[in-house]
Figure 1 (cartoon, rainbow, N blue to C red):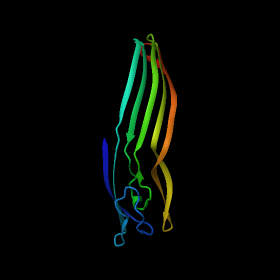
Figure 2: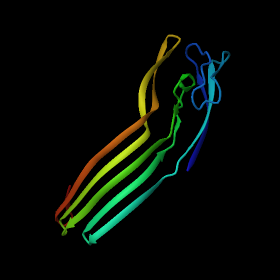
Figure 3: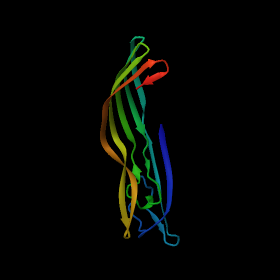
Figure 4: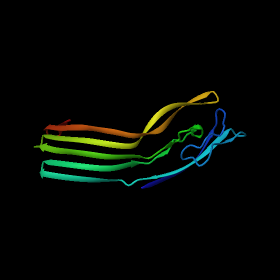
Length: 173
């Protein structure tokens, strides 16, 4: 899938209003109208990626499932738009990709106990993370949240879940 976004941002400039350098994804510099006090900047970018999942299941008996799964994921990039975007040097966030690996097993012991166990490993490229920053212009400081990309990140772990049903219609995790 491919995502395209075209955004025109208009906002009130507090501070100097001096046109700044063109940020990534910007189609022009910030334009300031001294008569209205408004500034504007246009953005354009497109993102796309091939994604999918491959899964292998094995059921050695009717109460057991063993599986392995691989997924290639993607989250579109974007622009952090808002009133202060016209002054921001970081309105752009690149697309995020993840390679996900999971192996696990599920086993039922009669009608009263189910055990699920899984191990997972997620390898991210350009993980999108919100970061609070303070920007200042013309002696005025404004707090904003920008999304940044972390070049590489790993999330991995192990899960164990049990469901106990000692009586009909009564379950405990």
